[in-house]
Image (cartoon, rainbow, N blue to C red; front, side, top):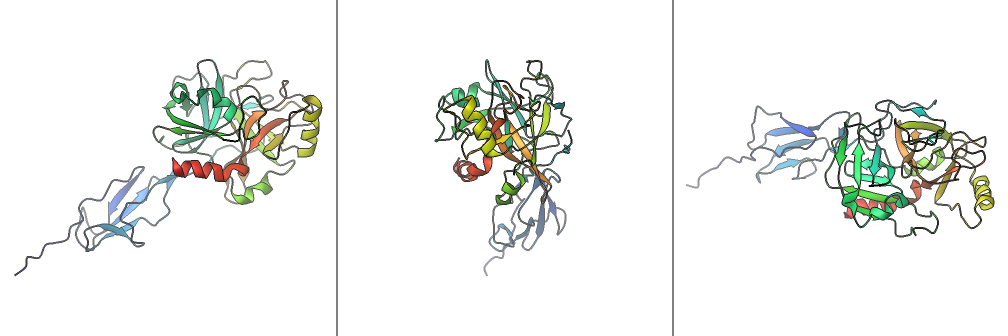
Length: 328
């Protein structure tokens, strides 16, 4: 007589940033046993319901037939910041206001970036162009408010991707870059990605709508900020901004890939040292913050009247961003 063997799927795979519960009974892993995967709440989420059954082939299988365990994806765009308030004319940020804010330190330079996944940072091409061939020389710090804080989460770059349409030293069109990190960072209240804009986000970035930009760049006193500062600034009329810069810098073009923001009266702006940081907006429907712009360029006199900050318009680059992240 043939021997009957009991089908046993064995211990289920561990779930990074999550856990597994045995529904049928403590550590029961035999045929038709049920397990439930869950992600660390608040900071991670999964697309499936996480329920798996031990099937006749000896594999834990989801209702959709998936044999691999689910993935806990980081939640994006949660912040304690409410709109009210170079980062010139700015206010100090509080813990949890801008958990996506990243400090990029070179040997002689400082810039910023925004975490958009647990292992990807979005920044300006001009801010990391010189580092592209030696990514490892870039010092990436997260989870800090004070620029010189000894307590930070260190991340190491694996590769820097500069937009192929960017030409260094010849204007700022396509001023966008991605940094892939060697390891995934753990998402928590002080380190969290900002969301990428949905297709509908364009309606939230019209003239006079308010965005928020944060950074450790130059303040009114002409010194790098010690504490992370932020400022709420309105989107400027594109034609007005274009006309201002045509007069100021003949030959410098404000393209359709750029957003302008700031006050006609001046006094609120991003500045040198803020390069690569995110101009963020609150999506009223999802109640999540998304990155609408990247600090790119502007007038020499940050915060001057009728001279706006110019930002890379992120919504124009979603296919480029998604293509690189999916291929690397």
